[in-house]
Length: 248
Length: 379
Image 1 (cartoon, rainbow over the protein chains, first blue to last red):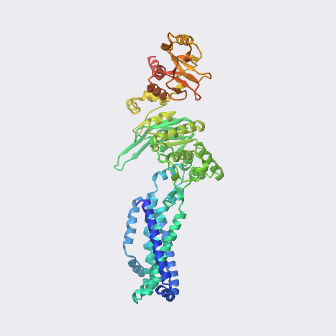
Image 2 (cartoon, each protein chain N blue to C red; image 1 turned 120 degrees about the vertical axis):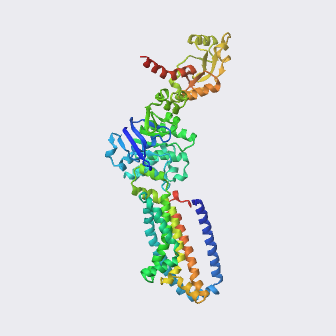
Image 3 (cartoon, chains in turn purple, brown; image 1 turned 90 degrees about the horizontal axis):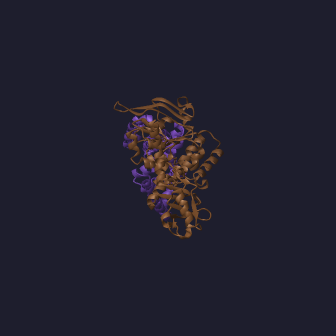
């Protein structure tokens, strides 16, 4: 897929998010005294407390995934790794075919229940898009740019830092965005292994057949994921140098 | 300045065989000259070039750049001391033009103010306004502008030696000619020692002080463009240069080289009898009429005034065309053919009459090289 297509998609995505946000906003205002107002009255404390847990889960697990995924992607993209990198990525790929719920369940056997296994499970689910995009982005930097850099007397470290990474940054960022979107949507499952988060309201709501409680969890999750995507889109726009940023 | 001594490169193919990309290449590029490495694709010219800055490790032989054996230098430092231009230009899209130009100065740890000032000077050298271009990104420049920046980037740290790998290959023919001319003008001042890879014979003739022709990794002939065109060493070179190679020599000579200068002339007020006498004396069939300042105005043909009276202004014809003394002979011949004439009046930049040029004189000049060779051979 070319960058232009991604761009178009991003545009569409932003618009859809905006429209959905609008609908929610109007709904909230209209329901101030009614259904939604009741949800807020009954569950505001829970929502704030659990949303905090939720955000911490997102930040810790995706932060760790970026910390591990970026170096791993760089490492796999080096020429001397070329023989093994595809195999390694296939293993990562197989990793993602396992449902996140199964990974969460499996991590209980290793780490017990609570915050740590939840972070671990989310980390595994988030890692692949990051590694894959870092690898892809770096491999797609044209060979002649690296040749020009080498020919001008740059060291491999220089080439990585001032030529390869900046030119791969857009693709890398796209990977991070995808990963975080997956992450925010998966966090509710963490409740099932005692990790907390807004999943508590959703699953309890389902079990008690209480739509108000369910929505008290679901609406903030939806808003959070839109907020995360919005913030990352802004970061993508401003952090990537103009010369390699198709958005600017 | 650049000396290659029995330089060889042997590639191993996956099948276990070997390919000899460069075979005992020995040559020397003197200081301040442009040497064009020319040949069909796969002839080893690019391999040879890239061995000079170590992008391709050599198998055998010695390379000296600026008097130093490259084996004894750290490859990274060696490359920083050699300007490098590639066909794809290779400007870094993430950096501004300013930062692109300053890549090598920054690597060398130059003072930022100094290198930024130099970037502006270099931009002016290729007629790009620093105020506009310094802070632009490569994608905001046209192909021709990018290529100019690619060249001045290689000059940023003022290296004595430049390696250029088909630097003007990706530009349209019109822009290419303009950039080539700009570059030659620049080279007159900066006098770099340049190894230049090309597969375009016309480009080679235009740019080169010396041409090295490669085939299958071997250096087949190494001589000046005129010598190469006049005396190709073997059939391969002759056919590579083309059957019109003598015509190509036309672009190596300028009008002033073969012009018959300081010639007889008449003015409008002169009597035709005077014109007649002058022509008969000089053995010419035509004479140019100049204005009061000496600008070429027209001409008189001997037959037209054979038996008439009066002044020149009553009998002259307009000049069909003139040629500038700085033009090359290719232009002159082209004008002659266009206007079906055997001679042209030559003028300088201000239109002053300087002399004339004839087809006979041109073919004589082209033939001189061959006659010299014949006399040498006869002795």
